[in-house]
Length: 262
Image (cartoon, rainbow, N blue to C red):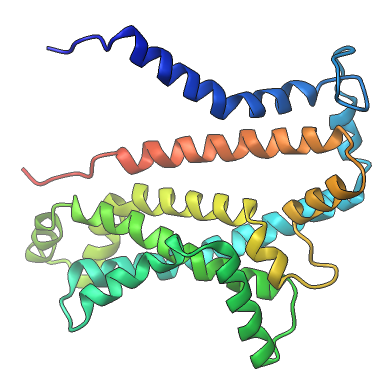
């Protein structure tokens, strides 16, 4: 039987949520503010959302962010899924060490990752641009995809795949017709998480981006340093809503229970 928590516990939880989300709420509200200076509410308007279409730097940065996000997500999802399958289905020497290494890009500060990748690009003579950004994003996104898909694999019932092969399916057919449908929510969840991480990244991208390859976070940061215009609130609100929806969907997909054999 569940018990209602004490009132003081609920008050602390509510205060923490307000502390965490009040700045975001203010950002969203002032994206509809008629005032140009965002210091007081003067009226409701959609002008700053229309203004986004006039800012070619924001549109170009958005296009670059989407392109890099989709490319890095596709690559990291493929490689991360294959790595998760290898770790879940096979036993080999050094497996525990490989699993531990998966968490290094996750726990390492982004500034360290950015500097190390920049040094590597300089040593290799690799030009900085969208390609270097995509490679950098793949480097840290693979770990996130692998962890999500590996968790999904651990909850799957392997007897369904064995039953398919007993009934005449070869290994490849059983994988595509039985394993992948069960694994698909985990793959999609990892892909959405990877896209969100890539789209929102600023620190690593700032180190490995070249001239003319600034993504949306870099463009927004540059705008803030030069002139705080409410259109920044508008584009930030759009990004906030999209990423929040993607994270919610990703969380729901990752909680879906895989099928099990009777």
